[in-house]
Image (cartoon, rainbow, N blue to C red; front, side, top):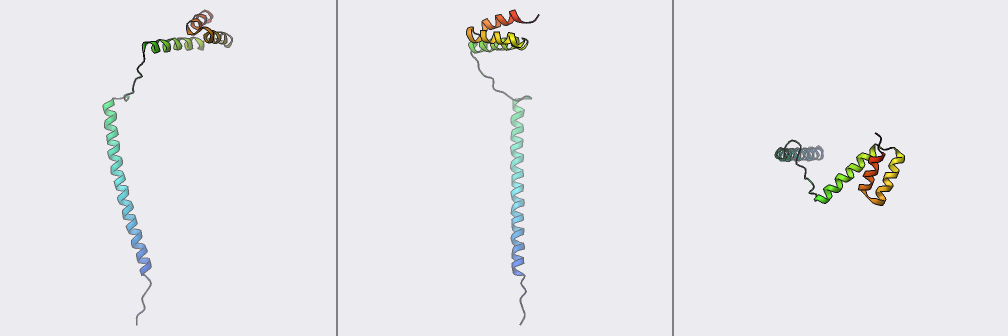
Length: 111
């Protein structure tokens, strides 16, 4: 009577490992295909938008535009004022608004 060798568990384990590796390879290949198609779609979309990409511009009412212009002028003038004058102009803006603060900043600015 011949004795059977105990190779069966090792062989089964090796076959399972090979099968798992094949499945992993297929998954990686599928992922690569999906990534390439997503990248090409993104490139096509960016090409349609132009060099910089399309940014949506905020639609502003004339009142909002005027406010932002005034605010920018105020901030630009405040940059060049010393701390003491800046505090005075800031207080004026809090009490009487941007137009008064801008007039005061223009009067106080260094020449």
